[in-house]
Image 1: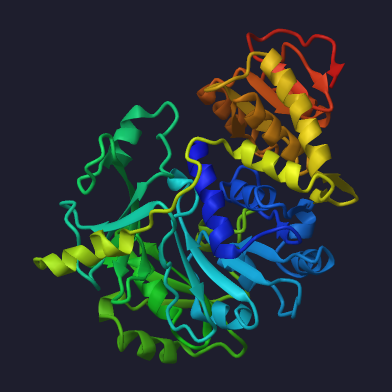
Image 2: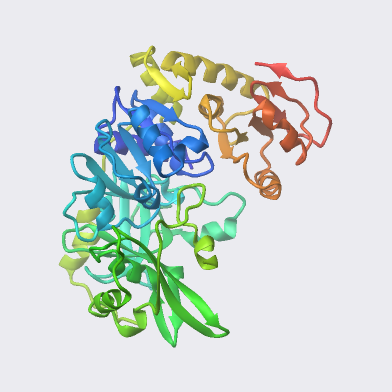
Length: 498
């Protein structure tokens, strides 16, 4: 992802969320998850305080509620399934909640949108994390994903790359200034997913094919319907699982819903619906059947309903589908007016911002404005903007001495900590690009990522050296940060502290 996309991200965050000094932004996501940079940029580019927590303090449920309350968090971005797992509490400091990464139910909005701002966000990593937003209120029936953010265009297209009309589903394509360059060392996949933009006259303009299904509403808001690869065939019928989930979430007694196609016997698939009720007792199966049959054809009505207290979650707070498994329309011709709205009017998102600045320069601007304000908090540690900048500068100079500069990848393998934030900023200040490596990943995955990215420098912590040494021998290690230059599998030199 280029700096330009991150700078546009920060610009859009400031406009939409009204973030500023005095705000306390929760850093919920793992560094290996793209939403982490969304949270970090939101805080450090606006003069707010970034609040980190140990993994145990961020577990959905009472631990996360305590974190939100005790740290007086004002802005939080969570997966809907993680928010749904929280017990109801007033949390007067929490003025803005954003959900992203999964479909959001009307019941969840009703529970958390009262007396605060509530946003439903959508966007893949390939579009620098965020592409659309919708501010929702507690009387919404089917939450949309909204409209494109600044300098972003959305196109809903059929299989021939022709626009679909309002109300008709199509694959969601993204264009604009925040598109990633492509996939590292994957030129064929890049060419498949990033295609020429037929709606732009700018040389080299591209579209990203998301693989997501969506449709326009008459007011220009976009409704997410699911994944193209969620289409399954049962008894000869092609079924979109996301469409069934969207209807199930409209039931007033259903908070969350996931639908999977399970093989009951070889060659025999059945639809299974997993749902979390708003309250007990859960709605009866015949009631759910009747509700769905009124809105869907019979072949799209699940044959099995499984009621859960909560959906199982991965460590990033998304639905754990693996854990769950262990328990044709003709395109109408569009008139000029019908083309004009979705292609031009609803994509008129031009907003001016410094296009050629880097994201760490935006941080440095905040350092000049509020040097003594607290920039980052983790448990009993905190750094002001001045202190964070000084440490990041020190690390950045050392990385430059190791040869880090533009287009150079640096592995970042750090536990959640103040050091993690300093490390990220230090890499950017050196001119490099960071590759996030979760220390809790299996050895095989870390080894693959290091070999695939061929990052010449690895930034980590001393306490992780033993585990990483099993993967490859560093040439040099520096304490506090342990910087390994990977020019070969040699024994480490004596550690140096920086």
